[in-house]
Image: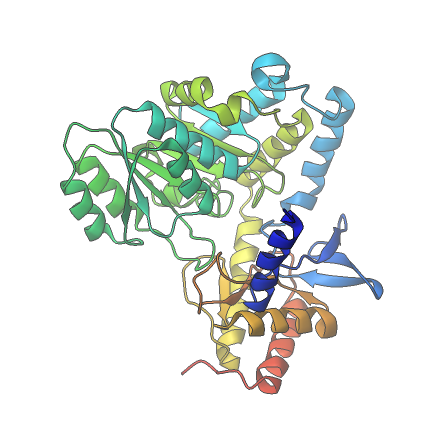
Length: 404
């Protein structure tokens, strides 16, 4: 059998539908964020990155870089294996204490990515708690969906951010079965924020555990960067808070926080923790430095909010349709996969602006978009340049303007 022919058949269909993902070859340049070197067939040139999840530019902060370099000199480059065999390192434990403190929890547990922490934690909870039912928000990330699927627990999907629908579904479940309400704080594609207080109150009413993904919020919200749950004074009422080190903290890795018993339970039963090589100690040291810094500094968050507001105001002035939300994510809506790809290519080629097109299956068909994430290091001139580019594109391509 010609397997390559089968592969290519589906790849061709993906391209015909406009949903094939092309990756730009970028080289981040230390000290120049949000600039990056773009390598293509015409050579190398600088572009401005507008879609990075390094939301605060901490991946190039001098203190974070210094901490990683010092740790490499001190410990070497790798962890030496899985933590249960040879990889548990003092830097891992220091980072877990920093994370537990960040969320006001007894304990924390590190994973190699935010995807893995969601997948491992939810699959372990759902499979080990007998007759468990997981109630999942309809907008949850793929990592949460895969974790729930792998657990083989009963899954109930409730309408996105609809607390009334959640309560109706909880009410129909037996009182004596373990229940987990799984949701996110900031949803990465629309940028909307969950009604956490109302969700927690309903979950508490029905004796359900709350599982909150704060991946796109940690470092960004709250007086110490503990996320939306910290900002709203709700972290102590949430059973498990999951997050990442790879976005606002500028490094890599994922984690969960909760009670000592909960974290030990996941540590002891999650295959995604037990059988995976641990994060390098230098990564843990850099992440701890980034978290500790953002617990004290509000400068980056304040400047980031300012630049988000400036971009939104400029888009409004030009009548360029973007999705309104209360977060740092600015989705500019296109609604067609081919046009979205074309616009992204044109921005890169003609304006040295890099933004990745967001198509199905990341977002539903018909809601394709360009997703902008202004950072504190994007200048006012960067915003003006981007708006000029979008103004020209909207005119040349006869794209619809927002209704005033």
